[in-house]
Figure 1 (cartoon, chains in turn orange, yellow):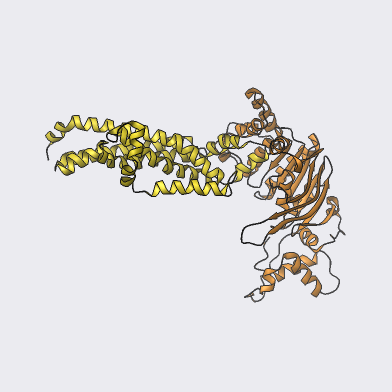
Figure 2 (cartoon, helix red, strand yellow):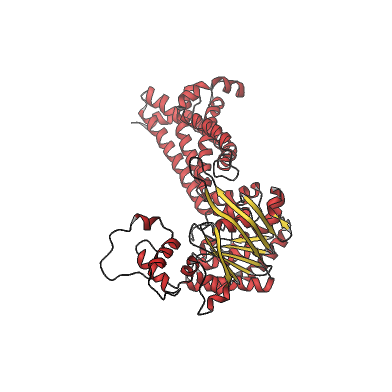
Length: 305
Length: 224
């Protein structure tokens, strides 16, 4: 369904070193699947997601969605193609001065649905899917975070897209609300066969929702594995970043004397580099679940994820 | 202090009030009419805007800054040839409206640019992802969300230019502020001066009060 072929994205600012956010990533996402993309902040996962609908045009490489090569389209054709690709965001991005129903109608308006009655009917249907019809005449400010994200999902679904891109959809939500929103995403995937791509830094989200996981680090796709393997007790990701992301919970060492300084080398290292360093100096018999704890002891004070 | 002076001056005061209303009533709507698209243009073409064109943005932005930095009295005199071309005369209320409007357009445009910039990129990004055209984003998203702020900007502009309009006496523009200066200050009619100032305060208070009310009424960002 989605095919990224040697996609790279470089940001060049005048007077600064160019930054390669996405570095030669190739990824095939089958129709109807849920693809998770995980990595730390700055790993390039959000840029990669924006490459799919060309919100961020890649510097090189091809992007295919369905039978269309998006990277070859004119801006007008791209605009049309985007009606088939829904997107939701961490910050919901609703229009605050429009009602919930009007927000959903907006995507239909942009998709060229001229008939106002048809827009209203289809918006009502979309709100029904995420069970938020009773808030249709309310404004976003009157909703909770989870409700806002459901409205955003309804807005994205109203045009009946084939793909739904989710940029950190639950990162602003508490675990309970997160579960609710993820359930809707799973339902939408199963019921309508929509291909879902979820970018997140939370392995919990991947574990609950995804079919397949792509791990990103420094703009590169470093590892892929089937998400169900996360439930296997013996599973160990191949890369240190993968192992680190699989670790559950955050531990902070509060015993012993406080460390005054973190060395410059430690500060400039990425968490994965720190993991490598720790693994290299670590004792024998290390399992995947030990490594993260050791890292966290090393980076205490600066290791909050 | 005697009311008689004021009563004597009532016909002039009445004329002056009408002149002020005429100046503000023409200059502000014109400033909104031309300043809003100019403000949107500035937002749109700024580096990081919807369609950045840094070079032409720098030029237009420079012109806006130039007009805004001119002391109003000097602008008033400097554009007299243009005023004459436009309204056929360089004195009187009609002639005063020209420099007021010229000054108010970039003033208002900057406020609108700020109002839109402050909204942040979120809703614009979502709209682009939904395949919206630039025009649709401006009409359906930016102007909708910036509306309460823009109404606030209209209020600020109105209040500022009620005060500016007092200076156009220099080209015979008239108005209540000019009356305060001519009769009150130059002719030592303190009563007239105070009365005219009270009228101006009342005018500004009313403009601010109604502006705030309308802005609050259109703002759905906070739950009532």
